[in-house]
Structure formats: C-alpha cells, structure tokens
Image: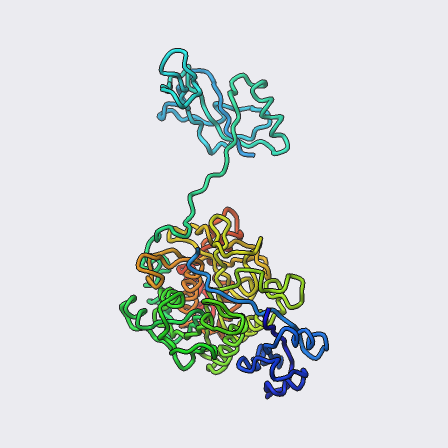
Length: 81
Length: 453
C-alpha cells in the first residue's frame, strides 16, 4: 500500500502547511497535489494523503485525529463481467 | 418440509379428480393423513400411470417406449402438504404403512425463474423504464429534474453523445463539475464510457436535471491502475460537492450524487477490525464525508454491486457480504438491480451490508437497451445502471421538494416505504424493501403536500 490517509482537526482557516507542521511531516512524505481536504467543515476535520511510513508514525504519535486509513482503488461496477 | 403425496384412491375418486367438471378437494382424497398438514389451496391432480408399450418392459424406464394411462384403475392422484422438519424421515417411512392408498411421498422443492446474467441480451429498453417510472405522470406533477444538480461520480460524461442518443438537449453544469488534478479534459467532453451510460440513465426520470461531471475514476494517482481511481479522489470530490451544496439558497437546496462504483477486493484494504479499514469501518474518512454530505442535504446513492450469488462478476473477491464501505452506508441509498419484468438480475449483490445490515435499500431497473455507451448491442447493465435510474427518480422529486423541506433521510424513508415489495414478507436481502415505485412516490408526495397545506 503506497499511500495512506490520516485525519486531523485544525481551526479554520486550515492549510496544508499548518497540518504538516502540526503533524511533524516532511514535504516528501505528503501528497501535496492532493492537499488538505475538508471532511466535515462543522467539526474542523480534514484529511491528507501521506506515505505509509509517515502515516504509521503520525498515527502512533497521537497528533492525528485518526489513521492511518486505507486508500483502496475504486472501479466502475459495470458492466458485469 | 413441503411435500407432494401420491395416492391411489378408489377408481371412482380418481375419475372425479380427473374430470375437470367435477370439483374435488384435497380433503376428498387425503383427509386424515397422520402428521401431514394438507394444503387445501392446491386442488388434487390426477397423474397418469406409465406402462411399457411392449410386454415385459420396465414401466419406470424413460428410455423405452411408454404409454400413459389415465384410466381410473391405473391413474393416481397427487396432493400437496407439509410435514414437520423433525418428523420428516419417520413420517415418510410410516405413511405408506398407515394408509394403503399412499403410494409415495416426494419433495416439493422451490423452483425459480432463470435470472438475467451478464452476457444475456437486454430485457426491454429505456422507454420501458420510462413507462415503469411513470415519467409522464412525474412530468405532469412538475417533477422533471429542472434545476436539480445530479453529480455523476464516474468516468466522465460525453454530452454530445447523450444529446444524440436521447434526441434532446442535455445540460452539463461545467462550473460546478470537478475533476481530480491528474485528470485532463473538459466536463461533458470525456470519452463515451461507463459514466456516459450512468448520465443517460439518470436522465430517464429527470430529463431536465443539470449534470455535474465528476470523473474520479479517471484519476491516475500513485497506486492507481487501469480505469480506476483511489478512494482519496472520491473524498476530494465529495469535499467539492459540499461546497456546491452549501452555496445553494435554502429554498432550493438539492444535490443528488450517483455512485456506480466501489471496491471489489479486500486486497488493498486494511483487514476488518483494523482501525484504518474502509470496508467495515464507519470512521474511515470517506464514510465520514458521505455521512457529513448527506446530513448537509445531499441525496447519495450507491450501486449495491454485481456480486450476486447467481452470477457474480469475476472481479468480486469478498468471500461474503459484498456490499462494503459506503455502498452500505446508513445515510446513503444502496441500489440493487431488477430487469424490466421486475425480477432481480442474478448479479445484483445481496445483503446484509457491512456498515448497515439492511442493504440493499431498494432496487431499480437495469439490463435494458439504453444508452449504447458500452457498445451498440450492449445493454445498460449492472447495478451501475440501476443506481442512476433511481438517482433520476430522486432528482425528479427534488424539482419540487428541496432538501430543506424533505430531508434526505425523509426521502430515503419515502422510497423504502413506497417500494413494490417483491418478497413474501417485507424486507429481504435480495430486493431490499422492493422495487422503486414512482406512482407510490407521487401519491405519497401528494398526501404530504395536502397535509402541509
């Protein structure tokens, strides 16, 4: 599994740089093109995509809200084969 | 256990049963059979006796010439009944001894029609689906999808193809469409494929809906493969759709999201029980954002999948409970597939779901000649087609019933409550609550409007 997801709670307005600082992530550990994506704006909950090693480290450190979570491939269902 | 009991009563009685002008009942033939509950709704049937055509032949061999005699002294009579499961062996052994007219006791197994499977020709066409969804009645009620955004989260839409296939204009809302960064292309101008089929099918019940093109399945992130995206792309798409929803005025707020995709295999997921798992974990960020978007007012529909036991898709790799992750989300509608005869297609995934047990919720039509987007003679098939068909009905409702008046939860309940129940008793894991019933939806909305007036 090349990349995983972690969630983080940050006060608005949140930025990817702020999330990286909060979680202690280096630039090469984060999918910057993916960015910081709001999951639930009412709860200030965001998600970012990181390497598996970074996800494991951040998850163990307790600074993340949750994760590492899987990021499985998704496919169209049809037509049935 | 249901059984058929063969008896050889008096020739007079056999003659009466064989005579269609003489009414006869199961009690006339088999009253008092110990341990058997007779089915009185099943009229006794006279059965001819096989006899060898030549002397010395075996009457039970079907590989030689036989004649069949309905003469009263030869024929027998069959009745239907039930024997308690725990008494079946002893009763079937004792019955011929207890009653000399009992010849034999046979099983009466359930028989089923052959279900539609992949590779089978289309069952009906999209005009049949239009009729089944009562589209003229929906239109007469002002329920045509006008102004309602329908996000097709898929492989992209080709608007020119849709226009030609439908013979009428199609609205693609480019401003509110969204693509992952790795996807190049213009909304409404992607190659004709699965997403175009989904858009076509959504427009059957909601021809005036505004399509939002969200081609997440074209994404090519690290880890991606041919024609698939990653779940993280869908999270980003949903974050965009939340902005679309929040930007709408309350009095017309509506957003229908149709998803004919999913995860076929546990291979790329953390195992169930792991806190990072997707398939069984309501705390996964995608499952969180689905719940959050639905709470904010979006109607979210997911295909149940094509892993039905009768003819599952070869890609299905979950050993059981194949409706996984958001496809089984309690705040989304999980859509199974039926053909235009109302019979479940054999590939439509059966419940229970992994996040919520009562999945699928309802079924909608599939396996009909429709868009032709998958090939000239290819039906619009899979629960991939059923999902947008149902989404179109939801979008039609939203033309007059914004989510601030009829919440997504209320609309889900309405669709379940009005569904045409296809099973013996209530909910089942093949059809869910039944097949979407547009006439029932219209009637329920009329009652609701009258109550509110």
